[in-house]
Image: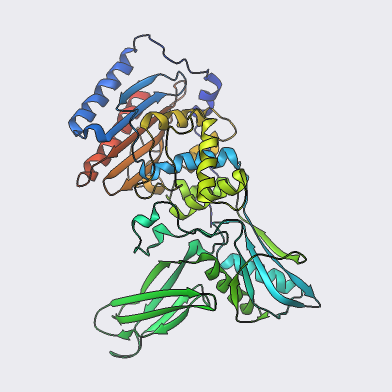
Length: 483
């Protein structure tokens, strides 16, 4: 997973940290005139949108803790991908920004030969890819390994084998990568890519390849034709992985990325191919199991730090990364193997340190996909405020959010002054749900503001709901950057 350069916080945010005091709850002083004007503008926007009880909005001054605007802010709503905010905060707090996943290779090796099977053990690394497997294979080759008498065993026991995250079964026939499965051993985001190209003439067999190579045996029944209508059926078993490709492909080459049902088995096949590609002979068999006692460590690799991995979660809204981080929290904080129930408990316990009482919100998966999670806009801004006041995670949290007009899912939104680069937020979109939560970073001498806009029941009106969220962020930025 490539990244990414250095990220710097706005100087005003650092200045704000020096000015912060504990928020005073329940302050009854009248709002200053600029704050009253902001509230009036936000009220007009909300009223004009006409979303009603499906809309929750909270806007909070982080230094004073004072609510600048609230609309139905206590109503628990589906946050869509804004659920990645509590996932990121829990991970930064519970695992720490420098946390790294590891992948190890074990076996009984002597004089260049591994007797019996070779074991590749995963610890949930969401960044492991074909290049990472090749790196492990090259390390083995450099240490003199030339042959494995047995096959490959994929050890995924860091997690249980309930690969599909909670609520993902609401769309059971969807094999797109946005709902990729999660295992203790993952490769290439637990997806495979099929590339289908035309043959030499109409009616000739199409040319089909798969990445990672070796992971899937192809039964190619596709032919070359005037138009493209390709179908792919993918199966994985203990003795192999196969895909039937049929239909027709036109003059242009096409590619299809598919999720893998059994990620550990697919990773084992990919590792076997990596071994062979560097000249290490290994038997055909690929199975899933545990690394036995008595084997020794032969090779290992570590992921980039969590703080870097979270860029894909926050800026790119990667569901696979979010669910892997979520389940890792369960394994590391609640005990192994990591389970979805333990992940939920770990997140709930970690968020309680930020003022979110257990049982008052529902986070059952880490990505926010489907109809599963519930949190209020007020809880979201409370969480954002508490996290920004925590110097151990605040810079990493802000850095992984999308930057308005510049990167991630906000690259094409909120361009120009005063929002561009000042708004750092997480977007969210589901069928009937639009959300936007994060921060507006201030100029020197003013407080950062946390905001959350959660809109449910907006099917057919998602464009206007998204415009409302952007307009609210824009008004907050105008308020902060007023002269």
